[in-house]
Image (tube, rainbow, N blue to C red; front, side, top):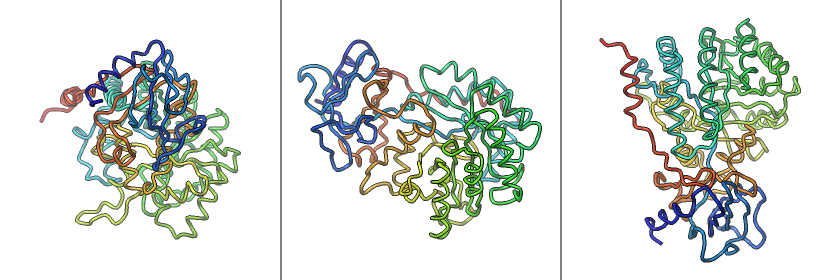
Length: 455
């Protein structure tokens, strides 16, 4: 069947109502909730050929290929079928400001300064709503099922941003599941604002978060009392029964990660803490890496690596070619039983000038950057079941009882999935073909023009 004929057939079968069989679908084993169906074998990429029954927007059954009706439904002919993906570390409030914020030069300190300037000048309710909506529209078109976003929550900004997010979360509830994390420098939690922020986040059902640096400081410096600050954060979290998600060691030299792990153990918070970035861990000695990873495993801390953004930010110096990739040691972490996810992080803002909230693109780049290939094994887990476990969101899996949120690729092997952008992927939400198109940049450009003072 030609691609055109397949798409036409998919549209006629996947209407979102009644029952429909998807036959001969190639699914990564790690995404199958109930494991490999009896009588099914795996291909060299760790994928199984299955038949899938969809009924009223949900997956009603998973069986070996050839079990479903031969003359009915949609024959995928061995095409890759994945669940929609999860992006568990995003900054929706910063997104799509790169054209109006001061030029950052692509370094972490300058990006922070440029973002601060843009925040003070523009981050009002309507501006936040427009840019968050644009980012979510991109994610929806690309096939993202769920997002955890960090929200800058400085004094004077937190109430505005969290109010806007609350509106967005309600508006998008049936389209993309959303979580939010409060983001402030760690020393904010010893101030009155820190307690007020914790109360605001608890009211909104979010997570406590922060950056393991002092206000105005950099990763790796200015936190001699880090254990005291972490104790203040964990106490606020325990009082309100909130999980924690932190930006940690986003630099070549920094070592806050062991302090976070010991704080999690000290406060009986094992399994409730996520740490993003952790870049400096990759540049430590093998012995130091092993020691810290063992501590992370004991603390039950989940790690999120942001390969595209840290490849952009880390090691950037004028006239100097970067010497490292900015990523954390993913293979070593996973081998020790530490949960690891990949995520998109910033999108078209001073911290990362590119991106489109496309987790397929993020995952494809991550496989290449992190060498998660030859074999691919369970690399798909880093954008599906791993972030699902860390966030508690119901997404990223295929099995009986799961919502039929799926994507079909014009690809018959993992190398084909990675080789092309997959811009022709077919998105299925609740058993129905999605006709959502990417929003035009014109929408965001007009907004920027209206908000940027004329010269």
